[in-house]
Structures are given as structure tokens and as C-alpha cells.
Length: 272
Length: 272
Figure 1 (tube, rainbow over the protein chains, first blue to last red):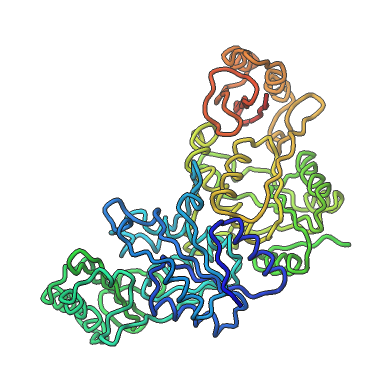
Figure 2: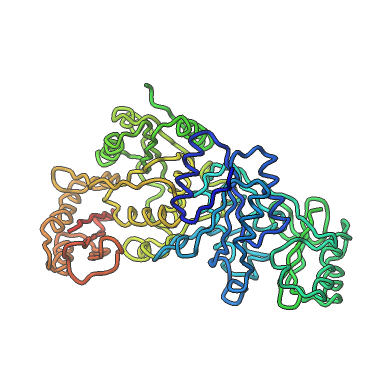
């Protein structure tokens, strides 16, 4: 079967609605494109869970970027993304434009006001408002039985789970494990920004997280990142469910790191 | 067929999902209960549009009331509401509790930031945030093909339409005309608060709106309300679509009134 390509939200919705009413189990994989092995693992997770239709959305969502962030330079490669989705077994790809996702006088936003306050939400005001809004739209367009997110964006996955619970979306959230390069570096579309020297420095993040044990010092982790030449945005230990701060890594915690490697902001995390 | 009664959101959702997948056309009629002829007209509108299932939700939504408003004393009469729904031909009624609509740590809200700024939204901060949030939840629970709202809450209907557009809900909004008592008074559950003397005063609202013509003076309308013994909250003329202020009533405008009659806040409107 040739993969379907949708650009118009209304056309995607009509097709998904018909497939749903015909009894198909629909999986949604929301992405910002520049697809890599991490994204492919999300498509595979959807296949493993028996989806009849796997809809990959590719949309660099302007509303989740701050004014000084990398919206403009975020990598875009529609042709390559489409080929990868087809090769991995996705059945539909959705490439909307900002103008058809945000119509004239767009004025409705979804806000999560608890889990999104700290971590990346604290450093990127409006980020999760943009994420929740676009994901709510994609849910309504694609009628998924489940949607697959990557654990690399740990806070995002928790925020989306909360949105599904609190707005009663009739679907399940699946969170797939972080996919890493051989070096340990977490796969990210933003890795494309890194020079060879920067890639070397960036390894301190996965190495530091990998060496964590219950009771490890977060200060030591933070120092090791700075020593490698990174600028730490945050190193935090939180309850894996509530995202409330915890003093020290232990079972049931998640340790999250955000650090600048040159101009590139990288994130990674580990659940203990 | 006996009318179905649901109290658990998950059970309503499961049933609606099954009916939807079986091909039923579902109509949702969201209400706060204390049902009157206005609500019955919404059920009739759903029937006329060929709904196979008509789900009436009855929920006094705490999130849309301000701290000094009438949440506590808002009239509640589940038994009478159920009987009226059954008599009018609704097929299911949903009576949730605040605790099962807003779970522990509820933290996700839907905000409309344009149409909800003025009129009632300006006087009742957080009101439309509560309305949008609960209606989004009801949409996700009931899987309606369409939802019916009353024109009496004109701003609400416009805000909900915008929410449906901007969040891509896969359903239509139907707005049914205002139902009036013989006297002209717009039907409202809050009319139950009025003494006989207050009902007399309240008639000035429908009378004043009824006499409006293109070019009529809003100041004169406002003065006639005050003269009848009402305290005007607002008398405004807006574009019927965008809700932008217009100087003078003319075709394509809506004139909206909110006024206190004793302690009771009444609203009414007329599209020219």
C-alpha cells in the first residue's frame, strides 16, 4: 500500500474518521520532522501494538517556540521524512502548514498548569501551552486509539498524559524508551546542529546520567557537565509521576538534564 | 426505550464510543440542569436533525462560577430533569459529580482569548475558561456529531464555535433560538430566583430589546432598564460574528444585555 500524504487538516480528519468508523485501530505519532531512529522506534511501537493505521504528523509548531529559540533554523526535510515513514510502515503522513493549523484569529489554547511549571516549562515560557494546543488539535484530527511519544521529552509525555486525563481524550498514551547513538548521545533532530567537537562534549550528559545511582550527587553531575564544556540549564531530580522536586536520586525518581552545547540546547533524562 | 442514566464519565464515554462505532449519530445537549422549555427546545432541535442518540449532560460546573456567584444556590433537581429529558425523547442523561469531572490535581484548562474578553467574559473572569474546559471534556466523553447550545448565551455559543474551529473538534455546533415566556422574559434556570415583583421589572429587558431598530440608541435602552428598577451590568452592540464593539445597532449586529434584577443577574440578546 502506498503511504497516504495529507496536507489539509480537514482531509486528514475526514479520512481518519472514516477509518475509525470502519473499525480501524489508529495510532498517531506526532513529530516535528527531521526524523531519526528515535522517531522510527515510535512507529515500530505503534506497529507492535497492532495499529491498522499509523499516522505520522510532521509539523514544526511555531506556537511552542519562544521568540529567541530555533523555530526558523529547525531542520526540515519533507522528502526524507516521507521516505523514512514509508519504509518503516507508517500508513499516512500529515504535513500541515502553520497557516492551516492556526487560522486567522486563532484564539484557543490548552494550558497545563501543574506539571509544566518547572523544568523545560520554567525555562521556555509558553512551550507546553504550544505543545498541548497542537497535540489536542492532532488528537481531534486523527481520532487515534493511541498516540506514541518518546521518553526523551519526559516532561512533555507527562504533561500530555495529564491533558488526556483532564480533558477526557478517549485514547491511550504510549511512551517509548529513549533511543541513543552508539556513543550514548540521545537521538534528537537538534543533534544536527552539533559540530564534531560539540558531539564529543555532549556525551558528558548521557555518561553522567548513566553513572547515576540512588543517592548520587546532582551537584557532581552538574559540575561534570560544566567541566566537559557544557552550560547547564538545569539538572534536577523529580518524582517520576508528579514531577515534584526530590532532593536525591532514588527509585521512582527521574533525573533530567538540559544543557547548552554551544548554541544547541540538549535534553536527556533517566528514570531510576 | 428506557432513557439511560450515566454518572461515571468513563461509562458514558465507553457507551458513546460503542454507539458511534456502530454508526449512530450522536447529539450532545450540555446543560446545568434545572431544565425548562429552553432546554427542551435544544433536545427537539437534536431530534429534528436526525440524532440517533441524544445525550443531555446535567452538571453545575464549579469551574465556570466566580467566588461571589451563585454556584451553591444554583437550582438542582435531578429527578425532575431526568423526567423532562425522558419525556422529550433524550436517550441518555449524564449526571457527573464535580469530583469525577475534576480529579485530584486537575491542571488542564482550555482558554479562549479573543471572543471571551468582553461582555460576560469581562465581568466574570474565568467564566469562559470554565465553560470551554467542561465543554471540551463533554465533547471528548460523548463523541457527538453535533452539540446544541441556546442563543440566550450568545457569547458562549460564539466562544464554543471558535473552540471547535481552533482545536479541530470533529463536530458541528447548532445554536437554537431563545425561548421566551409569554411575557417575553427569556427562559432561564435563574428565573426561579425572581420574586413576582422582580419578574415584572425583568420584562423591561425583552421589551427593550424587542423595540430596537437599526440606529436605536443603546443609552436609551440602558436608561429604560434602570428606570424599570434594574441595575445594568452592560448593554452592548457588537458584530454578531467577531463580537467587536459597534457604535450603533444595525444588520449583522447583536445587542446584548446583562442586568441585575435584585440579586439575580439576567442576560438576553437580539441579533438584528
